[in-house]
Image (cartoon, rainbow, N blue to C red; front, side, top):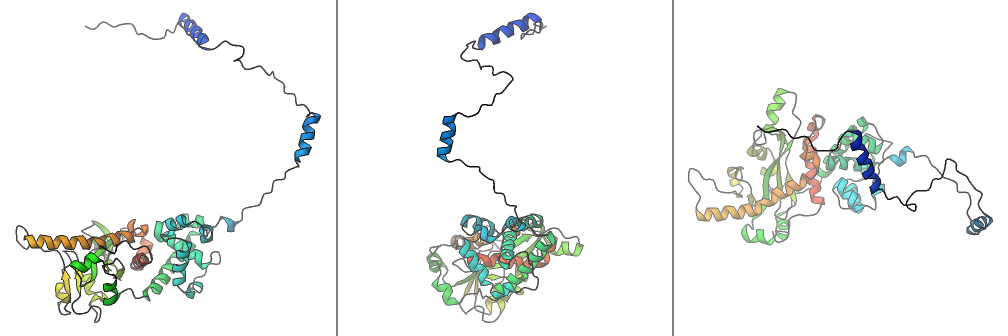
Length: 373
């Protein structure tokens, strides 16, 4: 039906090859000036003329020796001193602003940092702290840190666990729960207009962990909300955005109410009469604080109604506009990637302390809630 046509294209015959060769020759410029001169097969090295020798003597060229020094292990090892003048690098690796800020946090740990039970002669205490901060901030594998600091992987693991425990106990000595007066003095204008009695904003956060091999541990840490194994912690902030409460961490199956019941929020003297707490809809703890004359502001529940009343919708929107700050601070704390990427099996035992340290350090960084929030 469709007659076949001969294929058009370059011929493979000798005649076709000759035609293509002639075309290529026409493209090449046959110009004597454009041709590269033939230098032959021999290279003749001539002595420099007397004039060239005199010019060299005037310039004063001398024999140049190459100075080579062997790179020692110490020069290969990472150290905070190498980044002393690089604020951008310090912020990237530690989350702290610059070298002065880094030294401030290190000095906050006190002189006990120089007298830890586990001693590593290869690294000074400030570089051990530097390595720990890198692990918290970037969650680098122990193998990579061992290459960076030129120590064994077992040394990296031991140093990290040692410093996590040390930092936790040192930071725990600092009271992060502010008085009513301090909260009022630093309360943003927007909060003061809508919810002036707010003492703390509460919300729970979950940190993923590697699935445990033990069946009981799997059940205790499985979160139906995240659909994975997690550690759950209750975080509280002031209206100005300072972290004022960090609970112990529990398995992901624990409810918000169970965590609050086991926290120090119910201790005598924690709240003053007339204070209020802002929380999410799912945190139903009004009865726990009613005897202390502390109100819990949460969005309304439908409770069988098809829709909320107009004034309830307005109230809920106001709460949502202020409660968003706790979610921002939690996200800020999780810029320490060890909380975002998940804890390894060897880190779960110290999981509660790692979470406490990361959220405590947010108080030593730039505030993200404005004065007019």
